[in-house]
Image 1 (cartoon, rainbow, N blue to C red):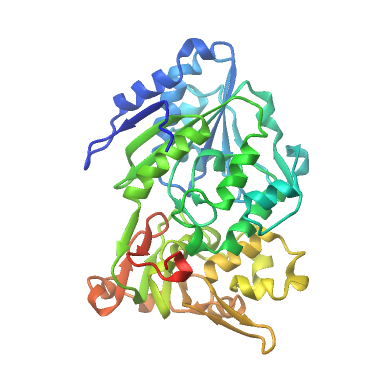
Image 2: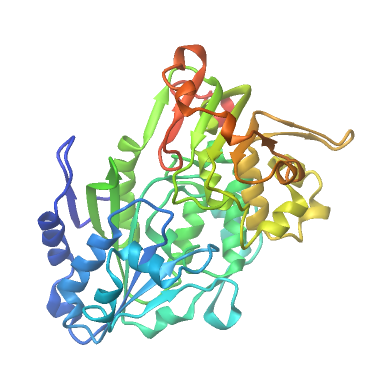
Length: 431
């Protein structure tokens, strides 16, 4: 493991305070090094728990007064654009502060599907993709990224690190790809992760997808500094790491591995996975499945409990309603039929559905577990997209609590903590 040049760890059971954050930021970003420079800070949208506001305000206080420009870009990936009030909430400022103290800061929503907003960086050639993917794919992968990055002299990435279903652990260059990337590479590596499968990817560091993401990151020639945050509790900082995207992520992911993965001795036949309010559609609420799939017993049921979710996806919903949620084998064994669909959407479909089998002769798909929605999404829509339905009003969360010995598990705030079995089955990387 490569240790980050700047790192601060809170003692067990405690958190870093604002002064400790200022000390690390001051060391990593000496003001004289940024004098007269144009800087863009890349941060996550509202679907990630972290003290982004503290980091934004600390960085602005440290270098905002000496830079020529200090702007913020939202790493949306394919998520919808954030309105001004949501951006203010993300960076923890008021509308009045934005109009005064931060009036010179431009807040930029990434536009992944607008070709005019992207720059072509070339392609990762097929022979490299074959090596990086462990032989799963051999194709040229086009790399596009938000062209506004090249208006700046320095990129600063700031985001949390958690176990992640597509790349293994989030953070680092992932805030470039897919954070502010174009559809070509975005669709490719999401599908690569889906083919490997969520249980084999999530919580593992050096996945094929991470290798592709870091290879693409090397194609961005603007100097990059990265702050990786590892949080616990309600989003307090357990650790802060700064360096190159590769250094900071490598170091931070080791702490995330310690803090964000819980091991269980046996699987559960029923799991109630409760989505927090920050997941406002199934596109992101699917994390309630990803992080708990490894501990659901064969033939068991995982219930995504989210009365506040009423949309499958504002951006991708119509497509998902057309193709439905299926296991990866469903698509691979009918590839000629589905290969022209956006691969990122196919990947999302398989991640929410979970692993399973598909018999192309009989047309029968057999999921390993059943995924049921107890949300504001209507029953008819649930059936259409190939997921179960449960009226959320019939569920009392407390009925699922403290019943682990009975094979029932309750996760009250799903989406960021990963659960694995202590003795992993073969489909999750065990012997």
